[in-house]
Length: 287
Image 1 (cartoon, one colour):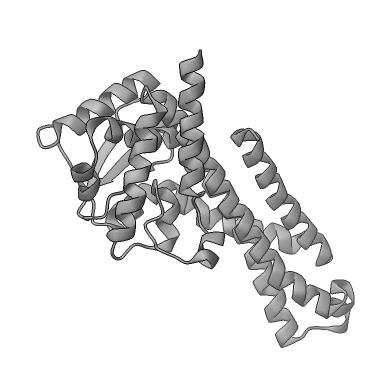
Image 2: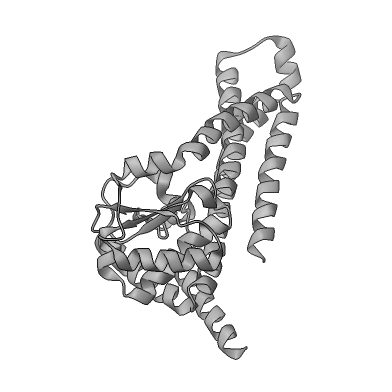
């Protein structure tokens, strides 16, 4: 399924969940309140996401004199994409990884770890940087913020329902809300469903950035080779002090987890990503 269509359907599913939950509670007032609160929280995260994540990982700006090859690659890719040159930051970590943030192409930031620069060849580094620019071009920070807003509103409503059931309410409120057992089950299950949909949005956007990056860097195999190396090395050297709330920003999840944790992963399986890139390369060679 086309990644844009898939993302649209997933966001529509979140909206339907929110509306259905609000209707179940007997009206739109609670739903509207939850939506406004979630919007305010995520608007702040969207507006200041670059500053927050850079500060969290102690990233420092780098100059062209220090890393001429990185600047040369990003300049080339930015010119090809017809966007301003993003700011480039270095994360002092031996674990190889990279991320992109910033609310639009005019405020884009690309972060790379020291481990990434030491591990990859020039072509592979170009593939990774093209992937990150793909996130910028596809407006993925905005899309992730919308998904987080809807999921956050559902979680807020669910929490309100649980507290209301525990503390009790008037007879009229109980009659309007309906069966308390049904409400309790909905308040437990809907946030889980919303979280899974939100994570599916992130996974869909990773596929989209892979596709955009594979085209932008000149060969999808550059990115495929980089992903294979990164997956192996991150398992050996996971990023210390990495935060789950920022895991979706990185090209590969910096957190290690078991099979159950992968169900709630922000990233699709690495084997599937590599297979898609290799298929792109084959199709490109046939043209």
